[in-house]
Amino acid sequence: MFKKTWLVLLAITLAAGMAFVGCGGNGGDGESFALPLGAISLGNFSFQTGDGDSAGAESQVAWEIEDAIAVTALETAESIVFVTKNSFNGLAQVIWQRWDGDGYDGWNSKDILTDVGGILSGVTEKSTDQGYNLLTVTLAELANYGNFVAALEQGKIKIILAYYSGSNKARSLGVETAFIP
Image (cartoon, rainbow, N blue to C red; front, side):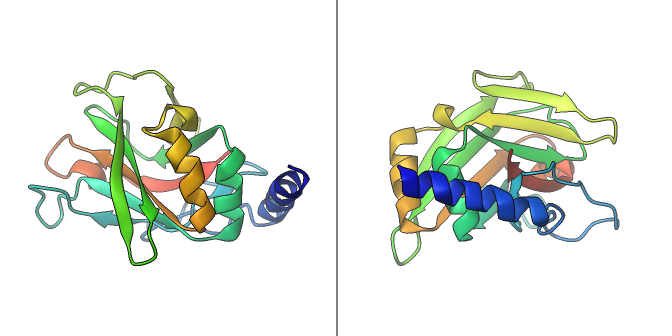
């Protein structure tokens, strides 16, 4: 227990000094969301297609988390915050996949918003004065949460935000980043 506590404190201390590092994913307009002091970025993200998606209309935004600080922080984190420029108005899920040594395995999905954007248990949504939308998901609400925590011991995990509304799907959200508060 002492070792994990020490590692989490180290991660928070290091992250405080890097609060503006790794905030974005795929470029942007030059302005990006500034992480709150002490928050830990999940790193860069990529868009990926799901069943029935076409190029430019990807339904998934994926974070492949290998950073030791982020993985360690996830072991004791209570939530993840997804930051977007636009609000959600349709079905959304959070999915996680474990690393099995050769690739990502499993599809552990949890609906976080209804098909009309209604917020489900363990989720909060708010807008900032700077115009960002913050969607906070309680980690204990994830599908197979006990397995999620165990999978973190591999040192690598994938977290996916899936959004199934509109013609541009996940791209239409204007995803900025995701972080551990």
